Image 1 (cartoon, rainbow, N blue to C red):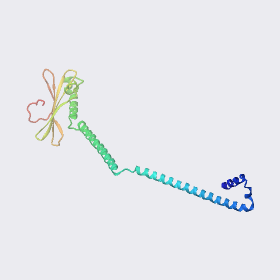
Image 2: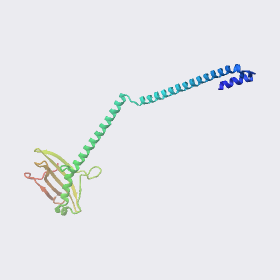
Image 3: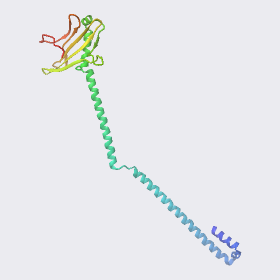
Image 4: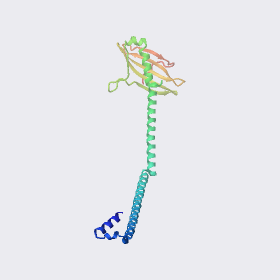
Amino acid sequence: NIYYCIFKTFFLFSGAQYLTHAPFHSIFINLKLNLLSVSKIAIVAKGKIQLCKRQKTDKSVTTTSRTELDTNVKPIGEKVKETTKTASYLGIILLGVGVTGALFYAVFSELFSSKSPNNIYTKAAKLCINDSRVQIALGEPITVYGEENRRRRRQHVSHVTYEKNGKKHLRMQFHLKGSVRKGKVQLEMQENDAGKYEYRYLFVEVEDLLHSTIVLEDNRSQDATLPSFV
């Protein structure tokens, strides 16, 4: 239609009004039909070009998405590295748990085991300060302390362990201080047939003019004299 209007206008302005007469009208109609066919062909071609462009765009989008998917896929070597790293982290965690468990076991054994020096010291100190003879000799209240270190702290309790006749022995020494005078505690523990510690002896040496000795436990059967602390 556009081409027909242009063509007709051109001839009208050029003085070709006679083209509208019957002899030329059929020719003009055929020309119009040809122009319409050409325009239809152009429209169809344009549609096909747009369709091709859309298909190319869809293909590029699909290719891009596939490329993105492919880039997200990790190579086997990288997966092996990540697996190794995870296994190493797990090993470190398990090692930490094992070390922590060993520390807790050591602390528990030291504080609550009947054979631990700390437990022996606590029980012996209670026996001494609750004994009426010690209370009279030293005066109340009574303080219990260990050996004095370089920082002038008295928390260290001197003790030594040894084995004799296939049985373990433990010797210990600590100090008492009352309102009147001081005393020194000497004790020795030995294993019985059941493997538990029992007192071989426990006594308090009072720091007075007579150097009195208060015996709280004495299970020695053959020793004639009190052994000195080692």
